[in-house]
Length: 166
Image 1: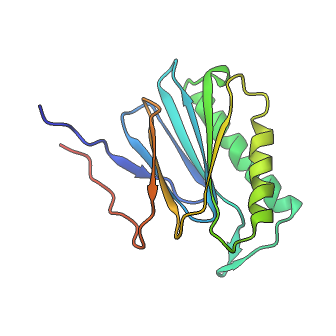
Image 2: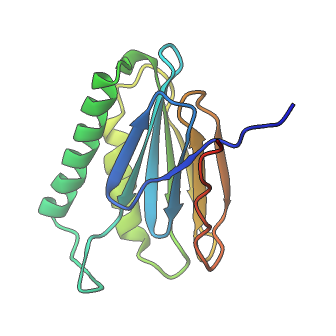
């Protein structure tokens, strides 16, 4: 029997993907975090890749109420789309995976992480949080339909996206 490697769908920074299909949702975290939601009763999973600080012309913007409210709006849209896909919030397994490299602003990362934790404070299942500080970053892979999660160090070159097996 030949194992079929699931298709990988890359989730770009400040974006999300949701699926019922047997695919891997992938985020390459560098000074950012991922929110993984999975409803095991419905087989629906999603991954949100959220940057700590937005940039303009390659320079970080100041962390303000406006930038934080933009993050909350993105999280809110992600959760609404999870509900539209048939998942139920009372069954969500919430996992937060955060990356910050040594020397980066830990205060900004902590503020955004606190915001995300507060958003899911009423979750019926425990919210798990893992923090990484590997250089240059960490790659998160989650099986959308089955909820499994893997992490690995990020190489200097982003990995090639595997094509779907025919």
